[in-house]
Amino acid sequence: MMFDENRLRKRETLLEMGLNPYPYSFDISGQVSSIKDNLENHDNAPVAIAGRIIAKRRHGASIFADIEDFSGSIQIYAKKDALGDETFRVFGLLDLGDLVGVKGDLFRTKTGELTINIRQFDILSKALVSVPLGKTTENKEYFKLSDPETKYRKRYVDWITDRNARNRMFLRANIMSSIRRIMTEREFLEVDTPTIEMIYGGAEARPFEVNIWALDNQKAYLRISPELYLKRYIVGGFTKVFTICKNFRNEGIDRSHNPEFTMMEWYEAYTDYEYQMVQFETLVAEVAEDVLGTTTINYQGTELDLSPPWRRLTVLESIKEYGGIDLDPMSDKEIMNYCSSNDIQLSGEYNRGLAIMEIFEALVEYNLVQPVFIIDHPKEVSPLTKAKRGVSDLVERFEPYVFRMEIGNAYSELTDPVEQYQRFVEQEDNRTKSDVNGDIVHHPMDTDFVEALGCGMPPTGGVGLGIDRLIMLLTDSPSIRDIIPFPMVKPGKYVNKVS
Image (cartoon, rainbow, N blue to C red):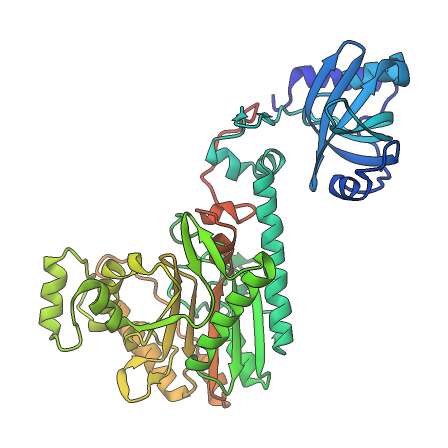
């Protein structure tokens, strides 16, 4: 049974007394914080608030309780003489977790605590599930919800019991509002792209497959990236566009990955990756200043300075600095031998660019703590990017890293339709050669996208920002599951009580 038997009996008692424990409305005069801020020095001021009972203490013919809303908590006081026998009995039927509406006068107890002397109260929702609200003292919290899987699976319980968890959601909303405001001030147009696509692309990722009943169960895919559709906007004459959307990738789950996640991508005609590096670091700094009031944050015990300019390192420079190896003059055979002797796994047929990025991941990523742009990637891993001016085997691409996490990706976008088609063909050939275990994702050729480029696309800088990872940093959250409202978790057996 999912409901607590004792609470069910109390519900029945309330109904037998002619009371509805689930009424339609309750008029409040404000939230707890506003009442405390505005009326703290006014004894006997009338107030009306609503909240959840988080503590209850009985002293004979009097009951003290604490109720909490989103903004804070306040003590309430029920006295039998003032409420009458039946109403006082109803108050005694309340449990921790019940939602109540209270009307009364403010006063201070002998210890100086601001309290509401109840003149009238209504049960707004009788909780039938026992929620581990716990007990808090000056030095310790007792009986709080501690199982992380339960926190993620039953997020509503996490929010009820943990003010910090609620605040993270509040900050998440503020961060996204701040991003939208900044992009609007930069005169970008927010646009939509399809969530269900017939041809997926824009990233190297395994998609989720769906079938469309209205089209004879034709196979389709959940979006892995909005990139190719946003570029169609640029082709169509929109010069500055962005979208904040959900992407879906049928891959691993860990502290920085969730199969469903939020990203922002923006595209700006007549710009390149150098220009967009400045736009990216400025955006992150402005959001931090807007939401937190500072560009210096503490993340998991490490102070990070988000203020521009961020350091810039090429892929090869970073490998030389952190790995102590200069790959530029090395032959393919030397790189292969280096990987073999250092337990760096290369799948399938050797590819120099892919090997360089495997070495980068093994030697460099962990060292990238302070904000840094890793730039100028091998051409083989960037099929949608223009070649670096003067260096044909590299591309104009940057990946921003903060505290060992990649939080974005950006290019000087490839706009030559013939070269784009050739890159797609080469990429498919490289995947086929590397697919020794049958686990490489074979992206279909999007000929309509190539045709769109053939209509003429201006020089464009394109950027992706991992919204969830940015929120992790700005809320000091160790896992992406802490800041996604309803993250993906393994299915669990339904239990009677949350514990």
